[in-house]
Amino acid sequence: GDSVTQMEGPVTLSEEAFLTINCTYTATGYPSLFWYVQYPGEGLQLLLKATKADDKGSNKGFEATYRKETTSFHLEKGSVQVSDSAVYFCALSGWGTALIFGKGTTLSVSS
Amino acid sequence: NAGVTQTPKFRILKIGQSMTLQCTQDMNHNYMYWYRQDPGMGLKLIYYSVGAGITDKGEVPNGYNVSRSTTEDFPLRLELAAPSQTSVYFCASSPGQDRGQPQHFGDGTRLSIL
Image (cartoon, rainbow over the protein chains, first blue to last red):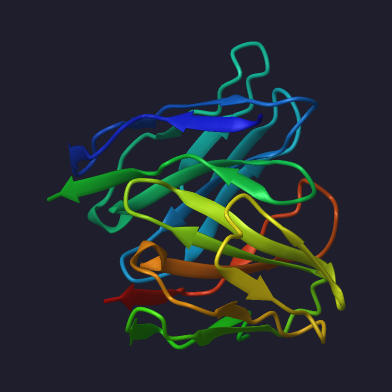
């Protein structure tokens, strides 16, 4: 069945460092891909999405490109801030419209 | 804008008790979902609904029931609480069937069963 694998955390960075969180997927057909972010004590918020191959989603300085040839959707940000500390989830649209999530990656940014 | 509202935010239950987790959305979305989030395990789909009167099982439905009598409300019921149901529960909604449409999440209900 469909699945998402993302890198294990936690990821610990200093402010202004470059961030990459790897995400790969297995799916039949042509799923849409998403990154969600969860701040402490809150629900998940959509960070960005891509709906077809080679699409680039971007928001708040974060970017991810839908790579069909490598079945990947890696999240990147050029310069992280303390306020980016959160848990990041990669997800794909599975059967029906339900989302299939990776296990999440905790990012901790220190000043 | 309220979006998706879940109540309660926290609850402690004893084994064997029952309770209903409430979820309501004010965006007139047809699709609604219940997920549970266990530490280090991501989110798993419990039940979903594609419209009033229509519900279906997700990946981990055992021990839960749902109903959808209105577009706005999608309550989740635990009949006989078990320690394995200790988790954080999220309700979500989306407008329709387009796979590109994101889901909107509530803030979650943290449930402990002792």
